Length: 155
Image (cartoon, rainbow, N blue to C red; front, side):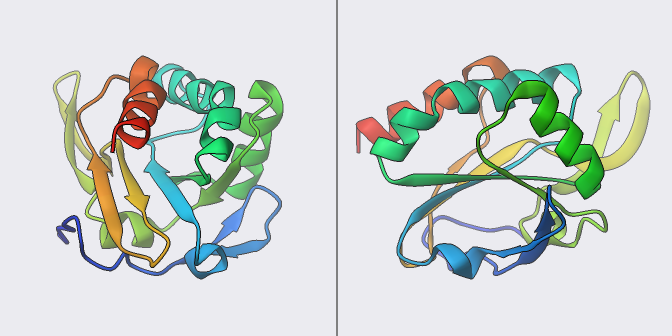
């Protein structure tokens, strides 16, 4: 498993978005990007987290931060999630979890007594030069957006 540290170059990726169009991290060079990994579209925790980011979009825009959500879902499932929740940022499909593995978030998880491989909810703030500025891995889904905004507003 890859372990990424703050200050390192963010692994490059190109994935399909909710419209099945290719989106690359390189497309956002010169901008701050919040890449957030979540387990599954339209589940309660992931919906709470996404809606918090949706409702904070204006503040994130003012701070010059682009949001990209990545999960192992298909583009079609991402489209449904965006439409149902009126999400206002890009979601990317990592169906083979290759990018999740590159970022070290594809891990063995325990849930209700069962062990499965899955996405450990983690966010990476990537700076304008493509380096990992900050890693967010300690938050609740309902306050993820507040943790991110607090960091951005107090640095």
